[in-house]
Length: 371
Ligand code: SF4
Image (cartoon, rainbow, N blue to C red; front, top):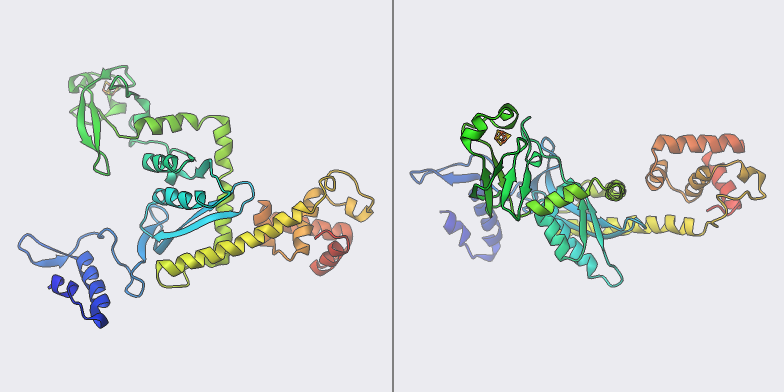
């Protein structure tokens, strides 16, 4: 029956028939006797909307779900300009989008990305390899490993060259058994002798298995271990902290409407993302232009304007944005401070200049060519 629906070639109904077949396929399965039953759980790539078949179930975290698409954003850390955006299925993994978007950006003349900063969702081995193949180095924090209160894998010394694993009690095993990772690729599982673990004083902190402790070693083990070791370096730590600028850019895109797709379909949603990124870049260019015009000495050396000299460099920065028509929220985002801090700078400037309205401030700033 499902195959018949799928095979409908009549142009007027072929597309909805194909969609219907996909919906039935993802929501039903056949039992052992060949009877159709409602599928338990959620089928991979399940269609969640008949009006937008490209929408997917997605997760922001273990408890927060959404239906829709996922947006990738690549920004230049120094200028804070958006270099590329893409829209993928809501159920796509974060890391899978990194290399394709990076490749697109690297293909633009004059742009060369050497280091790609990502959050923990980008730290898996496959993403690291794909980004390296695209010509950049990925810096993303490797998440801590836990093991329900027992020794995590990171407490063991894995020697890839010698093909051995040494446990916290100093026992070394070379008993490597074939294993598959979560993607079905061949891996190894190093097993410690059951009798050694049974007699070990650390056993209660290590394993509950009667067969002894085992440690799985995947294809990217050495790469992940190297990244974990590197992230304690102060230079890498400082680099990781700078990633928060991307979060600020995502906030900006959300303010420009990217919290919700205005269209049906991924192609049009991608167009929406491109338009939002273009607007964000124009706004950013206005900010860069404002500060490029600022003489380098103006913020550090006293001028001959008694009123202006009362203001701190930060208050002048805020004033410059006010004069350019930025909202408090936009100023907060650009200066990396809270909205409350912006309000307090504005109050302070108003008090020092004995003014009462933002309009007066704008006029005052314009007269002094502070815009
Ligand atoms: S229980 Fe086994 S693997 Fe764990 S520390 Fe003791 S000897 Fe090592």
